[in-house]
Length: 99
Image (cartoon, rainbow, N blue to C red; front, side, top):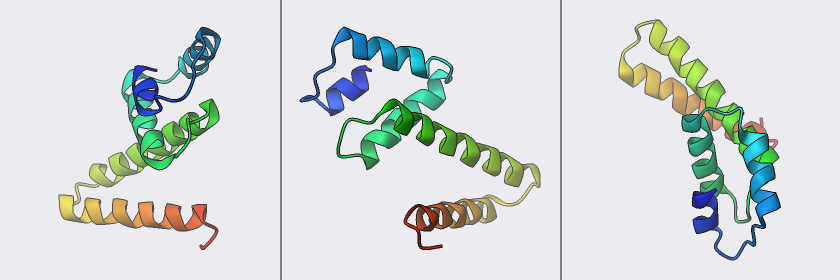
């Protein structure tokens, strides 16, 4: 929550709100939660909701699983990076309803 407080300094965060965010995000591992919060900060003009953070975390997990499956095939790094970039671009288009 400290990162969110720093990024959205104008957002009031009563202790009850902090407690709910902590409870609703507690099942995320620290690495995923931190990455999701940072991504949400990068892409949201407003304080992210719990659902937004969880959605970003799910996308990051999917990305990690996809990357792991590509690496498992022992593909060169250049191929892996290209595949990840293509997947990312496709997801962005889908998110905008352009696919």
